[in-house]
Image 1 (cartoon, helix red, strand yellow):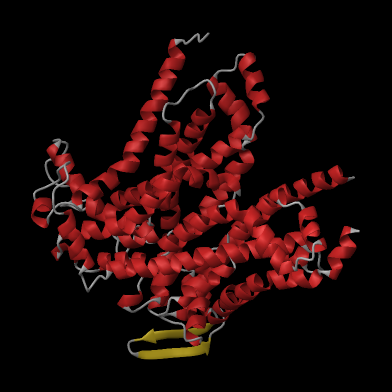
Image 2: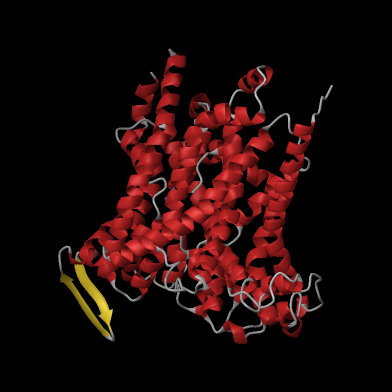
Length: 282
Length: 310
């Protein structure tokens, strides 16, 4: 049945070879990271060794008890910011998408066009005005300005809108109305459950995006106890780190990276399917 | 009939979209207008004194649009292209392989999971990791010396090319998996009949790729190109952390957003404003292309939907 000639065998070999090479490239750096975060400063000075050593717990407690780089506190801040961003961003994007999809009103077309026009607009171009606004509103050096703007996320809106278009029959909304359900109740009780898959996918991407966000938070947050993880990593780079315990430095990077990797390994199938669902990702 | 009912509920439409637009006006539109306003003022710190704000017309625009601007724009472009060319080439190749029915890839799911992984990694932590790994006393040099490839440690970040290649490599690693998955979806959207017909007609995989797959996924390719360009224009985290905000050696890895960051921190709001407006115009043009692409697709869908109803 399978007339395999030399050519297709060579092709298959090449494909597997390249894939293994790329997978190696992707994983090797993280392997070095994990190995090195388990070694003591003295061991690290002797050069690289492929085998982990026994200082993992020691390095971790050194990071946990460091007052100059409050990593664990940063993780708590990052979880608060990213979690709230994911929650309000998905809820309000779904709400906006529903509003534009189900109702007919005069400004509907203009509103839709406006959102589409700003779909991929970088946030950096408004950073100056944003920074001044936040300062004038008295929200400078607080976590609030990192969370609130996520109510208006055009890309997530577009994803939700596409999802609604293919998954919510208007007749269902009409039926709910006939049964006497109020408009908000219909949205919360009927539409939200239907949109669960889309909300879950976008919640993950928004969470990761907020977790990794660096440019704007670094401009706004000044006090150490309010810093999120990326700002702390940047502070670490800016410090005279060569005099540091290198085992600790590797452990700090591990602490910043590994939580996301662990979550990813559990949800990878779901996340990869989600990348293409809406077609739009920055 | 549908429309008549809709009008009576128009108020709900406004209520539902109000939070989005309110937030957008407060946190994006007002800052944008304010940024434009500041670009016409002289407003900076000199020593301990704050100078301005004084209206200076287009002075900031003229002063920003100097040789620095073009150097940093060039740097940004070079850093982007070093990552983008291998990214799109590898992604095309992998997408074609993953979707080729005649080529059975073992462990396909595993490879997909692994190549997408770097996309989720915090760019700043990833850059910090590269910085420690490729420092003169880091593990990369230690491995190269153990293997006997080099006798003395290489100063990867001491040369412009070395730094640029490191930044490009990180961008490549972070984005090729994502692009592969996007392109795969596009290829799987092509009717399998076309591939079958090509196979019956005796097309080799190479011919199929260049004559069928590539032309048919052109729209998603241009979408990828433009969104990647917009992303490239915003390049900040990786070179900022890798070079500690200096873009050294000799500012060869200094990007436009790193410049904006330094102007905002100086602070020099006037010139930061002018630079923002330039960036706004460039990304506005790029956004317009994305908008057109998304809109064409949308209009097409609407038309076919209407036809279906009638």
